[in-house]
Length: 312
Ligand code: GDP
Ligand code: MG
Image 1 (cartoon, rainbow, N blue to C red):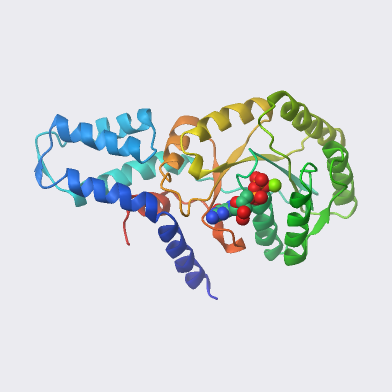
Image 2 (tube, rainbow, N blue to C red):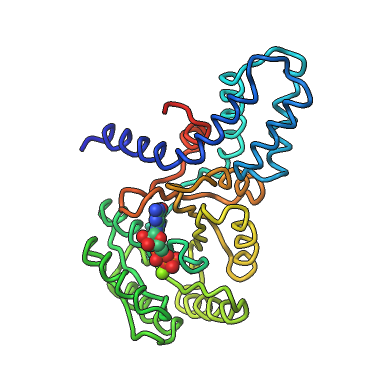
């Protein structure tokens, strides 16, 4: 497959993945703006529909205020609204569209992956392994979610798929000890990238905090600069609840970037805009499906256009 074909395949998946979010937003904009003068009532309606699309109240208010500035009292129709909002949304997203930069001088570059259970951590690790192994990097994965047997076997399957070595212990074993063992092995075998999976039992914040702190401490003992990236994986379907997760995990681990998964099938894609606006953390990648090719780097314009329903 050529790069152009790959790109258009991804765009199609992104658009169809975001369709539930974009059709809601797009249809609502069309029904609010039926060729009429822009007045306060229409602006209020626009604000409400942006909130309903999970862009969050403060981002929605800001978008609408900016949008209304030079247009108040003018005739306006849906198409123009979509173009203008698409540009405003892209401007919010742009500073966050930062790819994960793997420093090849680090052997290995250590990526710690954190997040609540079920958000897509293990799957994201598998997809990242596939991506970077495909670029010729020597990749290793550490099955640091020792809590669930399924997480270990799930990672082993990605290992078989990608050719990346998986370091796994017994279920119920010590996650920090496993992280130590994995980093030791990755250093000795001159790996480029070590992806460390973790458990995400949020019902007990203290336990989680202690476990992650211990993993980080152990990694730092072997390489003071590790982990070189700490990715928080968020499930788009949780909507505004994602904000609380960012706050908790920023406190527990030094989150350096986000991955937002399950944008397919969720009508809450707008949460990505709210997250970008609120936290200004890099959004390294987004997931629109379970396959390896369904995780891609985040592009502000592409995402804004897909969210607002262009090119459907
Ligand atoms: P973890 O508990 O955070 O490690 O989550 P998992 O990686 O086990 O993922 C939980 C479920 O979500 C699995 O069934 C995955 O296949 C699925 N999943 C992960 N990412 C995506 C995505 O982007 N889209 C969809 N539709 N499913 C996903
Ligand atoms: Mg997992």
